[in-house]
Image (cartoon, rainbow, N blue to C red; front, side, top):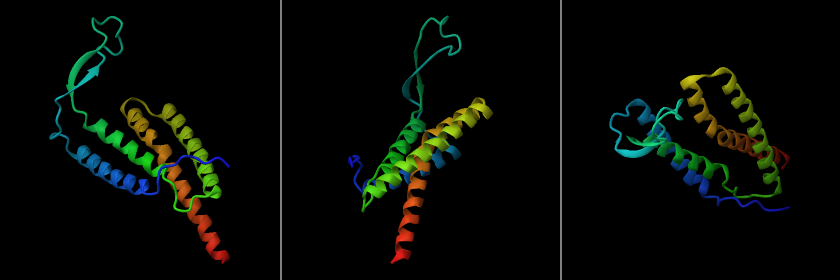
Length: 158
């Protein structure tokens, strides 16, 4: 069987630490973001709906990048958690990993279809951001549950 290149075992620990820090930052940002710096330069599209008629395609504006930084770090943390090798990684773990990934992709697709059918405007955008992280969370939850269940059954057989 072909080996899948996974991250080292300790990457999961770093991922959980980074995820905890990101969630703490996100909680602080949601409750009070007045202290955040807003002096970074970003590129914006003027007249998003009528961009063809505007004089310039893109303009520079000052904005804060803290939200984006927290979301990128959260994605990295979830990536570290999802693709970290188990201590006793074998072919059965690889099979569980594949089945869990397929299950998570199916659930995420159903969630995505639900988002497009039932949400609009700002809640739609929030749900899309949550959807970006959903596949990693579902995968890890399903994989850990199946691994726990198989280890529990193996311990009962002994």
